[in-house]
Figure (tube, one colour):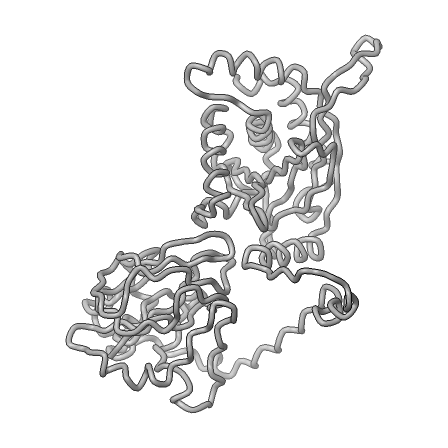
Length: 440
């Protein structure tokens, strides 16, 4: 039976995507691991691999189609011995591929005509813990025919996905029947509709009727940024801690290091020192190296530090893992690589997901100070302003001039209390004002 190839979820936040480019055409033979298409997620353009072998019998979604929902059929794969005639009924009733300017159609409502949508594979199964079991449509069909419990099968496909070969060789033990109590469990109440964040599009456009304006369409990244920041400000109890940091010792030390590293082509930035300072501070104050996980906190042992990178239409927060263990030159090289690929939207999800702490530096834009919004589930984010010359009172009371950088630590009060946040910020300040300590 022909197998539907579904729009994959290529990032943790992906709900829909753009089918940017097909790398195969109808009639092509493909094997597991072959690249089928390029798909634009809310964060990046990524390659989509085949998980089964077969022949591309029909492409359902055309190149450039936007707003294609995850799990929407995008193509049909034929097995050995099958031909295009085997999918004639399916293709004639398949929903028309969305145009590049239109979102993909929603699935047909339950109880509708069988001809309203392509023949669907068995529903995605779930394990005893309620988590989804990832399996190809063909593997699910074979498992259903043989009475296999997919929860007991280890997948050999990409990211542990169960594929045809895994179920063909499995013993046909029937899946356990659900407990009677589960069948009698009351249906969950529908979630309350989200309150609108402001007036709707029609209301706003009516306000500016007769005025000259350009309507700017939101891409996936802009929508995701808007949704996450709205969620963050509505659900995270922010509080803010502010400090001034004297940079003269750091700037002198950086200049000396850069002269010594010049032959290796390494040039350290102030931001590299800030990343290292924050990573070491999280080790000095381990209780602050934590994230909010709904009904509990997770205390991380490594210092995984995220750094905000501005890109066209939004931002990325690539994560430098185990930053406390890396040298300044290693951090500098890794940050340059991550930032470059972020601007080209070539980061993989594992490179921008995670971390417990973030840094947002707007000093290079001349901003003296600002308050950053926490990126959930992080416990805190450091907003970094520009280093500027200011009059300061020296240790012996004399008036002098120093280069001063203003920082603001935005803190999730559910994770970090005031005194703990102050201790963390103090550790960051000490590292930056005494930079040689970071190399000890």
